[in-house]
Amino acid sequence: MDNGYNWKKLHWRTLETAYRTSPFFEYYEDDLKEIFVGEESSLFEFNLRTITIVGQCLGIEISKERTENYKIHPADLLDARFLAGAKRERPTKMAPYSQVFGDRHGHLHNLSVLDLLFNQGSRALDYLKGQNLDFLDD
Image 1 (cartoon, one colour):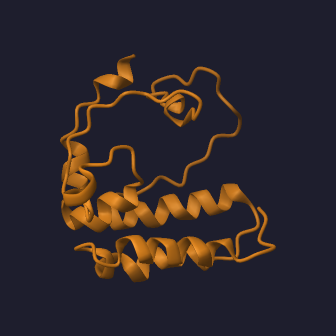
Image 2: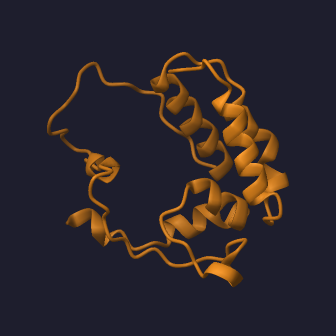
Image 3: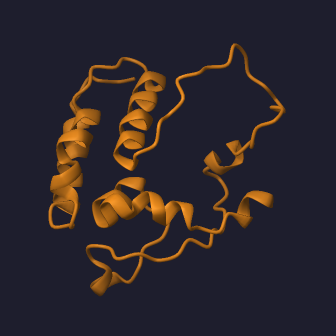
């Protein structure tokens, strides 16, 4: 991971600018800022730390269990790796929720989980649990 310039600080300032007026920014600010001050040298470790912190904010425990090798067809698990493919946008039917600039731009879909946390706070997990996941069967 290239830490030759302070990209984490730039990202955090961008989040502050975009979400400072959101209803729950201050509530999660201290926890989420930790993502952008760490000294990880690998993107893998940075991603794991980010997932753990966001999971804590949502109120879910993230398993630390790791596999020993890559499994082409994992058994007894939902294989949702296709969701990470950036080349093809997958249509999802996520319900809209209140957003900071929703009055000016309407609801913006496919934003970060940080948008959901900053705008919905402790209701974020209930929102996620209430979503239709039919797109996983495509």
